[in-house]
Image (cartoon, rainbow, N blue to C red; front, side, top):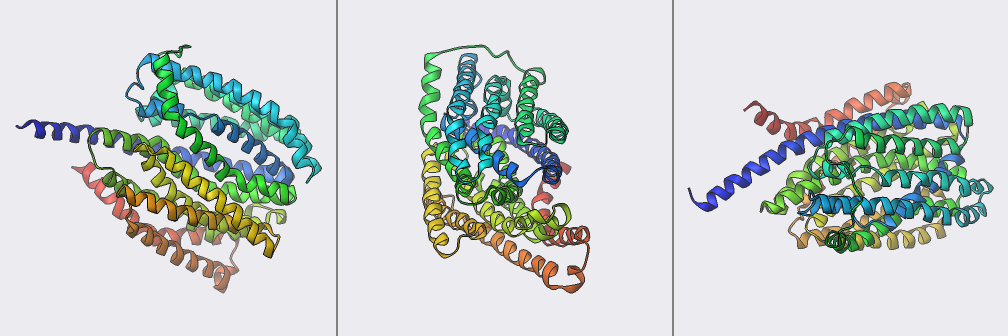
Length: 495
């Protein structure tokens, strides 16, 4: 047998073994996501019943501040461990962990410094925002706790031991919801949510030491490792900073323009739409990005790997978006009171924006695996600029939160056009899948909306029956495509 054939056989063997990890990790990621989202949805419904709308706006601002600080200081520590050939070297791994700890303390100090100015800024629009001066420092304690999370978590992500990470996440999610709802019932304020987030972080850090396998984390400061992390992370830093602005700008800007009660309703709708982005993002970073990195190191063409990953991810994203669009009015009629009625209008708009964003994120993962992290910064910067311009123009016509939300869709369209152009330079552009999924999105959404709003027998049904009927019909529409994905996998398993 020739050397080249031996290398090809070895490469195929490695890829097949890694594909098994990908499948297992994907299943666990989806199961973990599903369980977590059900818990969060249950918690949000209960919280909406016992708290004022302003609380959701306040916590959205708190979350945006903490995420912003985290992204501002992000140099891709975990991404470095996943991507770098020395990711399993104790010196490299412990240097990365040491940086993680230092970063956690810096984030807390930054949050303390920002708390008072931010509370003053937003309280000019709504006096309730004064509470931010105390909420931000309390919630920022999670930064210190998360900084001490074991380096075993980074190693598990590098080797796609997703099952172990998801098990920890499930335990933390269950504990967090129970603790949060209990504390909120007694306190009836946003402080219960801030305290609950700290307790959840404490449990997650503890479990990362107790449940994960691997060597103990130790403080280490190796110069070569430090330089390698910083060199790789300089574009990660810029990209994540701009990504923060791109992801959080709507809530931060709207909270300064519209009443906090309205922004609180918007936050609930945005949270529901972001469930789709969360699962796609989780699969991208925990499964697809390590997969791309490994396949590239084994010599496989990234365009082939990208095509294999794109179709199932986009199909799942389209299916979930359609469910949100057609079930929005029935869902809010069933689970929320009239204070949140506007969310039923906002959710379909935001779901469309998330669908567009999910396509861009698939390309972004491929860009990152190829080392073009600066492209992520560029596309998100374009999204930010286009959002601000679109928002300004739309608000000249009508000052409405619903109209303002449309600016998000416009900015996602412009960003996706740029992503397509960059993807074509790497040979990734294949619009057949995108056009097929767009057609499915339009046709099934239009039919579902007609059923729930124009077909009298369905219009008069109880919201529970409407949701059940819509879920069955939309699932039937997508079943042939799901079978197309699952059938080859089942055949391989049978062999």
